[in-house]
Image 1 (tube, helix red, strand yellow):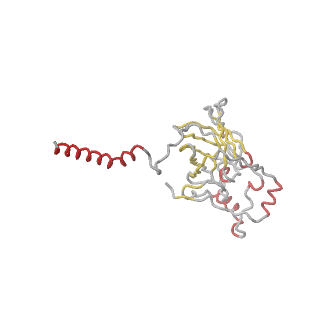
Image 2: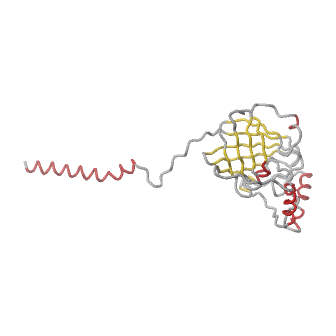
Image 3: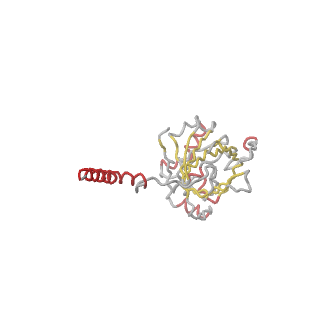
Length: 266
């Protein structure tokens, strides 16, 4: 009887030891550790509404090197950047004299802060409101055709959008031919076609990939991109372009021409 009790007691001790030995593992499985990934808030990839910042100074960047320019475009580029050889600055940028920024140039100014409006009572269009010079842009979503030659030439062109899976794809044509592509002085012609692909990665991040086709100005298509972060608590600044301020800005000598930056081609 004594041996039986001792044996039974030993079994009980062993069982308790096994439970204690596996307890940390059981606890680890039952409760996430401090480094466990947090669940992302739900979001609708087809809802791009909100304020999106592309980065201070403009987050637009080239994917790889700019393509070779056609002769006329090269001549315009040389004129746009002639000051760099003597002063190291550019003062002939059209936006410095309050000329409107086109696409993609508008993403290369200020903080690239953009408000996207998708009004339920206007499903046929999406509005983009840019902080820079408080500029409105309309993306038509009702399947209408592109006007002949893009319609009347304009700085922002004429934009038609559609959904490709979870990506908003926007085709824009009908540009005026005097605009710049970026702050570095690269020109474009009236044949420019811009394809924008907006992709909401998660609740707080959105990627915009752009493809520029301009056979009059460039030998190949030009790819660019900008990464946006949702900034729901930011306020839009008053950034109207006043000619008087523009004149002082130009004369300050504090203008530096910066390439929008390059990253290795993918």
